[in-house]
Amino acid sequence: MGKLADFQRRLRPGKVYRRADLAQWSSAVDRHIQASVRDGRLVKLAGGLYSVPKQTAFGQAPADDAALIEAFLKGSPYLKVTPNLYNGLGVGLTQLHNRTIVYNHKRHGRFKLGGREFEFRIKPRLPAKLTLEFLLVDLVNNLGDLGEDRSATLARVKAAAQNYPAPRLRRAAEDYGKVGTRKFFDQALNGPDVEHA
Image 1 (cartoon, rainbow, N blue to C red):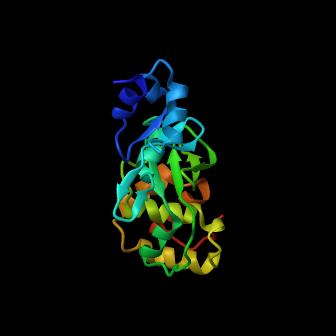
Image 2: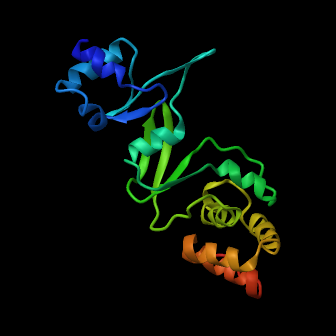
């Protein structure tokens, strides 16, 4: 078996690889990557990032978001959020957004991976999984970017906050909220109406 064939035999459909991952199987990795891209065994997603196409009944399936993000961040923890998730919180939001935000500890900025754009934002702390409390806090953190009526939305969030377990919501606000968001939830859960800063 030739070296290129041996290299390609190790590639797994649907998997995303960094160049460094591929280098372990080849002493001429750049040549083997180029040959594999030419014959369609690999697809270049971004600089140093490649996927192995997975064939479906409808043609080639794009690389899975989770596989893309994990390879891009080299396995570092992350949390993927789309503002469309806020629509399910029962606070009257209905706009659709074409954005995917990836909270993480390593990268900041907008990156195009596999033809899709991701907005990476560094956060010092991330929940282990997406919770409704985190989403409500995140909504208030990002309210200025959503094109919604600010005071009407905050009034609905304040009303909705009463339906959440107060200790969990308070903890989410303390752990993940901006300063103004923490103040808003402190007032929403404890006391008098004060305008959110």
